Amino acid sequence: MRTYIVCDLFFECWKWKDFFEHYKLKLRLGLEDMSNMKIWVPKCICLLSRFPFYKPLKKIIRIIEEIGITKSPPIMESSLTLEEILFYLTQQIPKPIPNSVMTIPLANKEIEILMRKEDDFPEIPFKTMKILDTLGLLEIIQIYKGLLLEKKLIFVSSNIPLLTKTIETFLSAIYPLKYI
Image (cartoon, rainbow, N blue to C red; front, top):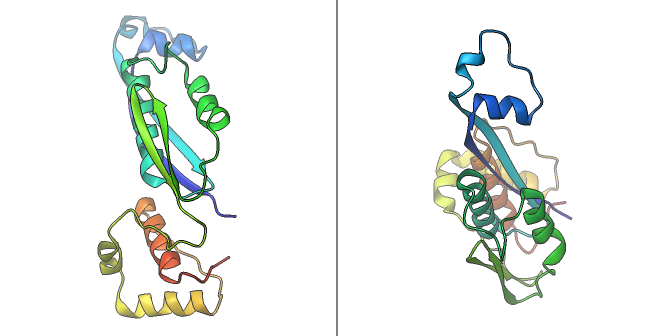
């Protein structure tokens, strides 16, 4: 079974003093003057799914970022921690029924998830021409040949989102065959 991952990197503003206290670090001598200065700390949120819910998962990440950065709006009735949000998303929401739309309430917003039947034509939530334009005709033919002959393929790129989209495009294009 495949695993789909949606990740996003964002930066959260902290005061030096709060950052050091939160992570139980000690300020070195001479840095006490900077304790009220603000720093931007990188954070990355990744959501994994057994289903290709790219857009809904991206919306969920954006909502989590908004809550983490602005500490608003509250989810459901009260303000929840990140762990409580993730518990709600992973444990409280049932698996969508095939061929139906499910609505998830989160932070006064509604996220719709369309669960397709397993034998439905795969939906590609991005433009494939941009992806195919990055490859030459020879590379496209070699990739298809490798997929159809069930060869082991290794894709390498410094652009991770493009890499993921490229692989999804090729796997969708060989439907109803499956590359395992």
